[in-house]
Image (cartoon, rainbow, N blue to C red):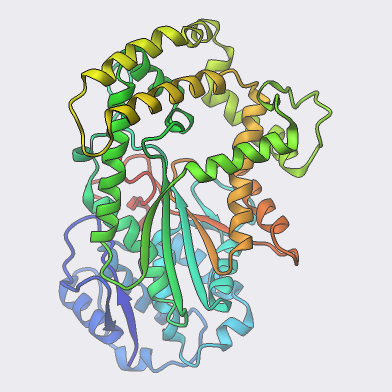
Length: 455
């Protein structure tokens, strides 16, 4: 018999009725699909197909895969995606394919990879897609490891855009089912790698701390500061932190460890790296003309990250905004007064709110004085250190759930991974599927989105 560990990733109510985290026979899954989707799918020769012992991605192999995809998501893969899937299977190292005495042992892992990650064949960066070679490398590294520890960074949970701008999302606005679907994807990948002896998942996000203004869009933070609502912002972050932690725990029916951890220690390591490498005045350094070490991360920052920084950070070129930021004392007093007026909260004491309000406003003014090239280096170092950490901890794997998937992020992560190992080798960071607007009537995998799940 053949089986997979099942997790429902459907955007609508599943027709299958299987519970998450349960191992289910492949034969039962296909039989249920034939019953539930008679107008979409039919397999007449199931015993013969499952009796095949070759790993070659034939049409019959694809038929079984389509049935599994329907069972998991209620969606089908397009012809183009199946073509890319065939390329992935052909790209896998021979020793990996030989490790399976039965080709159906791999179908659970392959199915969840195809569901969670858009792929392209050309081995170059494409936003919101991963190269087939990267997927093959991920599979090979996972297969050769006895443990797997996945890390993912989350963006700040903004609410929907409204006239005049947006605010952080209240917890009532963050859809539980999308959180569960995102964590279920990662749980499914680890659960279907049955050889692993140890598994864990860590989501990293900004909580209520002095660093709050460092990871939120400047326009968004300034809106809170101008209206004297930074204390409210900190409480919202505290509520989000508790809510996300509760939901990822509730969405985990397995023994795999899942945690939400603070981004603060990571940001501290980035600041230490910047100061230790480029000096105390790194924020005002023009790296385009600086004599600072022209390291690989600086080259990536100036060629790949700087255009992104200039596009996303108009504050640097806006003299009126700089003047508003210079009014730090005015913002500070207005927000400190608000902290006193807030009702007592079990999430944060008034003293802590006042302290963090003061620190995050001052850090905001400090950060917005960065030279654009310094901001580009800072952002690049963030992903560089993520890659280096993954390289230095056995069995570490990186999956992107944050909004953007820029070339500099991937290049910096890969450089950090390569330089973080005693023996140089290439690692891989995969970015999950993302679409700007999820269709309510979608019928294909391209309609799925796992990143930025709160919007």
